[in-house]
Image (cartoon, rainbow, N blue to C red; front, top):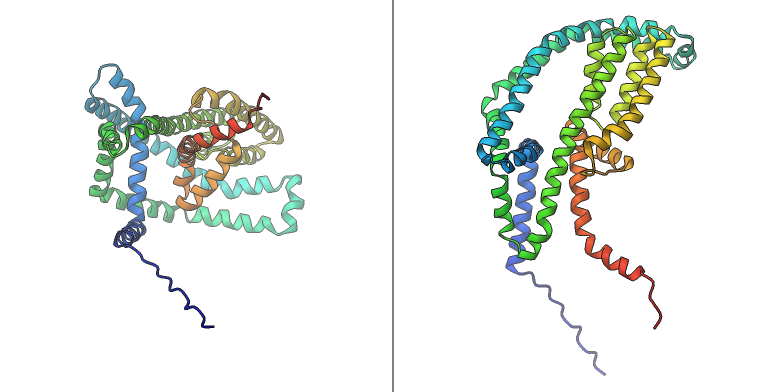
Length: 356
């Protein structure tokens, strides 16, 4: 009996599939080669989306989109320049004094009995003291390097102007761009996803403006507390608190540790009072300030927030950590709508059936 021949299996790939794969590869390669530019464009888009609801409110009051966008953008720019001009000099001078005083502050802190056993076990006292002395000694060089970097940044006028106008044009033409993109979708898809886009933009705006407002409140509390407790460099402590508080969850904890450590150099009583103040403020921030500022636009759990901060911080550094909440809010909004049909079907299956 003759064996039947083995059937031949042919795998055919259409030209369209090859072109799609080629286009996808080109897009990935371009994204990797221009990652820095893409991050800059992303920051410009986040800024535009953050200001979009403010512009939308002006438009609903009778303003045209262009003048409203220019007015809001100019207001933010002027406020930023005024803030830098007014605070740069005094803050930098106090930062220099603060860094120069760090070795003496560490000596005062390490002399406390509670720290002696911990520091002596790993010879951490000498190590940290030497690091602080090197930091103070290298401050002039750091300042020169910082000024050099700043000069290089401001020297790239074309790039700066391009990104600024990109954010402004996105702010002015955002409804037009959204309408154009939805022109490729079916009416049902537009009806479903148009509210998701608006909610995502609102979430970005709420998180950015809310995070900035909360940081200002935290900086004010820290600065006033430091001033009342007669701590050294209250302005620097307020600035450090405001910057660190921009990082959700993690920044507040680091701030509390720094403030308590500085208070310990004054007295144990001051440190205890600072701990109590920070604990009380954190509870007020979590249960009063956050709900008032964010309202119902963003409802992220603490676990989700910390995971987002760690992931985006690893990818984009400090900027990623600060922008983690807006990104996480957008992802949550999109996933909530994308999974809605299945969740509704599963809910119907779980409903108890009435016997006939």
